[in-house]
Image 1 (cartoon, rainbow, N blue to C red):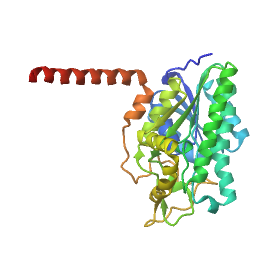
Image 2: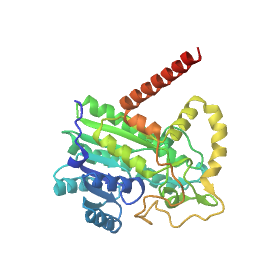
Image 3: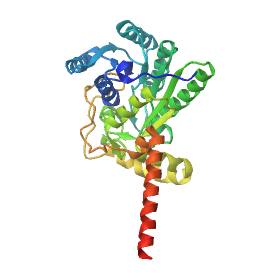
Length: 334
């Protein structure tokens, strides 16, 4: 059964990882569009000021404290959303953490905690959401272009995003086979100007950096909310990231040579890493951006992915116009 998705102004949207970065940007944009939003993060104290700001701006929002690694707490969050707003129309899995370290030097307890948040947080979120979406809705997960290629110094993070991709794709098949009208979408951001690197567990000598080029978080929020109202299998935010993934897929041997050299840009040796990290506990929340980049505010590739019909028409129109111009100049010359 094909999903029917409501306009944003008629939706109830639940977002995990909503206290900073992409999750926070999406929560604010959803509320501004008229959606009723439930923000989820580990600490209630981190969410209450955000909710108060959304409400003061005319939006409708509430908060629920839950560690996404705790399946029972996410089920309770889903129940709270239904009790507070009557239903759930879109669920967004946005919680995520990162580790910067060679895989051989990644502490086992950190590696396990990263998967508890990134991968099992997605699993728990999906399973909490599905019973409330069975009459129709959107289930959106924030993956990464790192799920399409390996990443030296961020190997554990990339592995978790590969796992998320495989889980989401299999889940989409199973829900489709069951005839459930749920749109299952994987959003794959390129490098995005959020505080994730500043929050990361970093075992390298220097400050962790977001792999360039870097895009504005609002582009991801816009793509996520587009997927809340349009049935999409997946979307990559940032053409540069898509190009990197394609290069890795088609030239794997060369990528294996170049990627470790490019990974040097993941660390700034002149600056210390902010402490503590947020792997096991919430830190320095309430910020959408890192404050360290001049992020790209547009991506023609992502716009084309969101509106393929429109951009195809534009492309044909431009090609026809260019052809007419060339023909006109050719006639003028003869």
